[in-house]
Length: 423
Image 1: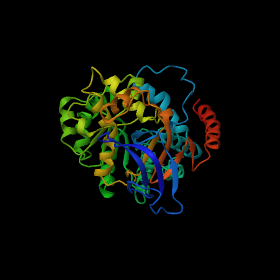
Image 2: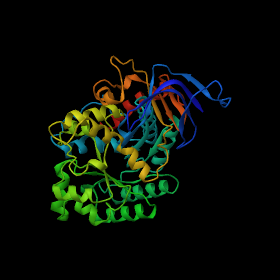
Image 3: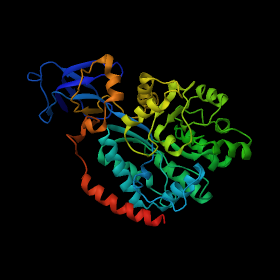
Image 4: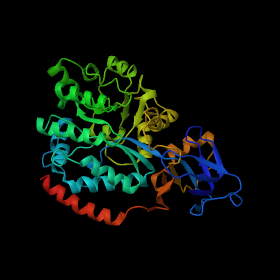
């Protein structure tokens, strides 16, 4: 157990503040409660009593769409010939990267992503992985790293036809092996790299393991053009025809270039949507429109970083004038992932997951102005500690379960090797 003494606790839904001694139970999905008199309360001998005067605690964050496999690209040399469109970005950067990954790189990428997520107050990561030439066992490798750091996760492998039928089948096999032992999803790249046979196989796999699909949808207009030309259907209609929108756990990522009929079809389905504002801006693919999708839209980072505060702030500011958005709606979008996880009975997003801020407020912080602080003053550098499943993952800016310096040193060396392999 952990006792945060004199902490200021912010209810993540009502923004009401309460100061006192907060007792946090250990274990997945356990509870928290205030105790009035800590001196007279019988605490376990191993209970950690943490003086927390002046600090704030709030439910930690969920990243609804990450790509840990991209962890080694920061500062990477640019392609000799600059990509001219989204498809060329995939061909010249991301599809060269995923083919160059080794098992060691997959492992270190997951470890550094978990560390960076923890430093950003993220306790739960929904990740979408790809490493076609280091595929077998990759999801278990990643899971072990996330768990070593102390984070909860929902993983999948990005099944695709782009590297041939053999690797497609290996992706299906990797997914099935993983789902036999773990909570997870059936990952798909995007409809324009998937045959009808692949979509049918993915549907059967998701149905067999009572899972759902995690797929990129209409990130760029090319996805729609390809599907219309090759299959005579728009992306959402094609996915729906295979029953992929019928799963409560299905995640549709991006949904930038969808029309009104597709938007309504998603709204009427069981599927959820993830916006990735900075990635969309970086790739110049367009702006997210939440019409009809407010109550099922979540936020991710698409592998650009692990900072969900920043993602929420960008969703708000980039959406002004382009999306039906204000600060409450942007914050709700950040927190919608809790609803997704709870409604689908995924384990690991309990109330005993807390982010602790050492935030010396320049103005009073109260329930009525919390969003003003969140969108205009909150920064990841204020995050002091992270508690996951009732245990410290980061305590006063120090990672508890892993040697961060050693991991980052190894990451730097493997990054140089990766860049050379990519040519």
